[in-house]
Image 1 (cartoon, rainbow, N blue to C red):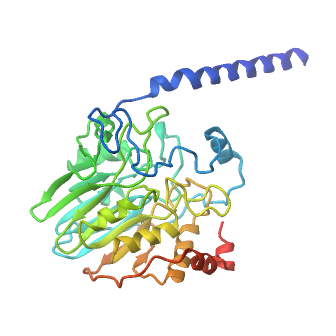
Image 2 (image 1 turned 135 degrees about the vertical axis):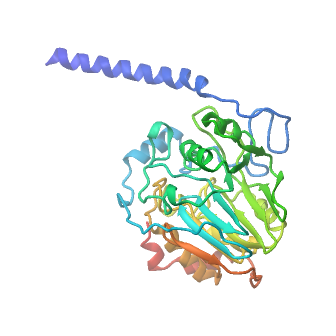
Image 3 (image 1 turned 90 degrees about the horizontal axis):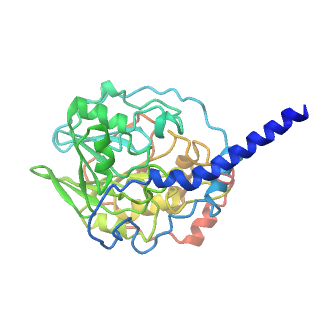
Amino acid sequence: MKKAANRILLLLLWLVILACLAATIVPAFLDRVYYRGPASSHFDGERFFNPGIDDTAQPPTGGSRGGFFARMLTDDRPPWPDRIDIRRARPPARVDGDRMLVTWIGHATVLIQTRGLNILTDPQFSRTAGPFGIGPRRVAPPGVGFNALPKIDLVVVSHNHYDHLDLPSLKRLWERDRPRIVTSLGNDSVIEQAGVEATALDWGGRVTIAPDVELVVTRNHHWSSRWFTDRNRALWSSFTLILPGGNVFFSGDTGFGDGGWIDEAAALGPVRFAAIPIGAFRFVPGQMHTASHIGPIEAAEVHRRLGAARSLGIHWGTFRLSYEARETPPRLLGEVLRCTGQTGFDTVEIAGQIDVPAFAPPAPRPPADARALTRCLDNPRVAALR
């Protein structure tokens, strides 16, 4: 027994030594240079950064990164369902003219159909979000089956995190439809690993999609990494699709930062529809946002500052990435909108569809008073949300 115990202790010691060696040696081999170019207001010649406030380096708990991952494995988080049954949508082949039909496929994947174009954001159809099939597992199937997707004309990819840049999904789309894929600097290098062509642009870059349709790569507030030491080797972005009947804004994955990115998108023209993230914001009890992810309170402010006629809450309820319960983001958003008196910001379940009406300017509203909003949200319904 004593000899066996000594062997186990020796094995554990070697495992600790190997783990320490891996932590110091392996990351150097996992670094990747995705982009080379001149320094700019958000690129130092090697890595990208957020102008103004750059607060995304620390884990959302404020502690160490090792402690963050340990807590993700050990903390008593609110339970999520193993699976949610949905009735999958079957979108039409095309939507012509000024009509706009939006289908939430799940997470940050949204199908936008208008003016004869089929546009897909951050396509993620895989069962897991991570390398080698390892990572968070989706609790609901995609709201549109891959084979039920209409022919896709345009794909936008906001950044290279696995829940947003899914190479198997992009490869399937490319082999089937040969869509135009637009992303931000450096991400084309990742996408091309799957034999897929992509156009990579800096913030402010523009590309013509159709005679009366233009896509602008716009700023947001986030970070990027596929492995470990390749952090911020590629750029992150939002997108604004400029259309005659009012623009479409897809915020990608974003924190609030300096908020200037919202005004920059609004300056491009009236926003008929916006897809805004509302989930993955809670990593400690009571938390309402992180540096990398806005929660419902900040999402409502994004909706207001965009002057969006209609917004849809996304980035929730598909992959368990944080500590809040699955239904907390839409329920908290409902409370925030009740307190602020805002309208036009909705959520749907996965596979839900919105027939976006013609643009009508929303009534201007002042920013919410922080103290009054806090008092309004201090109610039993919000207190019960985990």
